[in-house]
Amino acid sequence: MKADRKDIHNSDIPAVCKSCEARHRGICGALSTDQLLHLSKYTNRTTYDSATELIPEGEDVERYSNILSGVIKLSKLLADGRQQIVGLQFAPDFLGRPFKNKSETTAETATQVEVCTFPKSILETMIHQSPELEHLLYEQSLKELDDARDWMMTLGRKTAAEKVASFLYLIGTHIDPTRGINDSSIGFEIPLKRADIADFLGLTIETVSRQLTKLRKAGTIELENNRSVTIKDMNVLRNACEQST
Amino acid sequence: MKADRKDIHNSDIPAVCKSCEARHRGICGALSTDQLLHLSKYTNRTTYDSATELIPEGEDVERYSNILSGVIKLSKLLADGRQQIVGLQFAPDFLGRPFKNKSETTAETATQVEVCTFPKSILETMIHQSPELEHLLYEQSLKELDDARDWMMTLGRKTAAEKVASFLYLIGTHIDPTRGINDSSIGFEIPLKRADIADFLGLTIETVSRQLTKLRKAGTIELENNRSVTIKDMNVLRNACEQST
DNA sequence: CGTCCTATTGAAATTCTTCAACACTCGTGG
DNA sequence: CCACGAGTGTTGAAGAATTTCAATAGGACG
Image (cartoon, rainbow over all chains, first blue to last red; front, side, top):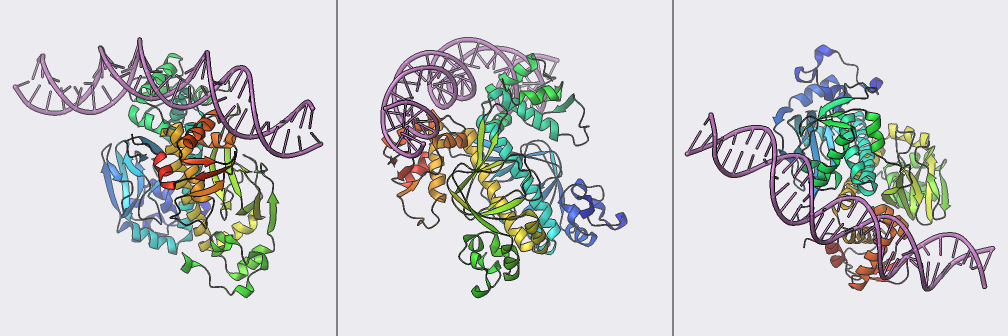
């Protein structure tokens, strides 16, 4: 992957892009210095509060984004109010649905979020010029598809206890990119409130709460307050995601 | 979309490709006559019986395919045997996971299936030469991602009755591409047995059976035998996919 | 004709939800 | 400074939906 990135001199890079994760691990890594410069003329860095709706379901989107920090939830709504979160996105993910005017999902911030937005048209022009850019977008979609299908297993076949464990495991493995892969114990802030967790897992708030209590009483996790959790041993948690017994 | 396809003279097209749906609506539409000719040297048309495992989960895949007829199910397995079908694929879908050696899912025929297979390496070389080909593959992945997320709503938030209705609606809208969009009544063979339907919906065989009986008694469907069904009115069925009451 | 595979149906058991009460935190305004 | 209300989370008890267990039936095939 690294070899695919354009060989650019750091000095030529637009200032806003210099230390940007989207350039290192996101889609901007596919762009040449010239392209980066061109794009940066139209970009807009913005910080949003938690619980801000960025892309309403079914409405026209005029800008795409790169997520710079924070967590975004993608959700769907039924007419009677039932909700399902169909994906979580972390930095430096690309946010948007290329080649389609209307989004199939609502995108909403779950935490405070910083994004770098740019007009749809600019990116789509660049896609036509740069197969490498389209390739990176394609790769992200394939990854999202793999993730979505993994989660379908969780939604369709796992018990409430396994679902909650799977959720904590997912967050634990995504929230902090700098975490060593071998750290068996980690602590973090859960980026979602109970209602969101419930909507992500296809459960009720109460069931989520009860299962968290059960994990706490079993010693698998510690809950400092509602949001901050410590996984005592990720291996134990991983086992809890799939109780073969 | 049609304007994007290469302008080719019918006489130059390889014989096997002439009436192939993969060329009209599948990924081969992105190929020039020369490319089609090149690819066709390595293709292999095969027919498989129902319940044949084409791609085992986690194993190396050496060939990709286009589905020419029939239905393929993509599934995942937990250690204790619980199974979830994470997608169904119909003609002329492309089958395979590009840019990854190991498949994340098992691909198995649900019905008798005819495929056109070709070596992974040939396609991946062509992808590098033809951005248009990669674009079509990308578009299919985006569609699969949209479908997967739709289904996550079904798995996570719908009742058993709504799930079974959603399944019949999905099949009814995919099984016969020639069907008029306005036909309110349609009949078809359900391509999955009860156990598969259950694995697709995250239910048990018994619950599926009971819900089908309920739909039959309500007059929404007719069941000629276990496999062949008539939807009396697709609009009524669509409403049953999401009972707002 | 017996066996395997598939599907249906009933009754009991289980899981999860619903309903209800209560606790905690935080910001605001008296 | 404290009271109040909104928002969030926990816990218990009752209820509902779905699963599990068990029995039965039909069709395909040797």
